[in-house]
Image 1 (cartoon, rainbow, N blue to C red):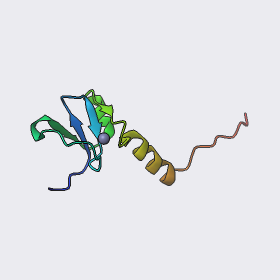
Image 2 (image 1 turned 180 degrees about the horizontal axis):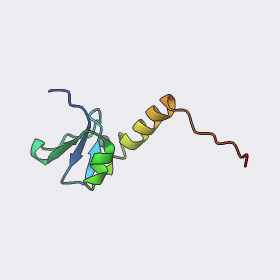
Image 3 (image 1 turned 90 degrees about the vertical axis):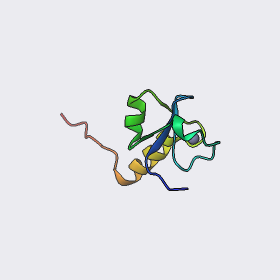
Length: 74
Ligand SMILES: [Zn+2]
C-alpha cells in the first residue's frame, strides 16, 4: 500500500482518521482524503476516537509553539 498523507475521512461513518489508524480500513471509494484536520471537519467529519487525530495534532503543535503568556499589566 502507498503511504498517504493527511487525514482519511470515511463518508459512511462521518469520521476522519490518521493514516496510521489501526481500525479496519474502509472501502477506497468511501474514503476522502484531506490535507488537514480542519479541512476534514469543514467537510463535516468528526475525529476518530481511536487514533485521536485532533489530539495528535494538538500535541505536536504544543511542542513547537510556546503558549502565549500575556502579562496582566495595564
Ligand atoms: Zn482512527
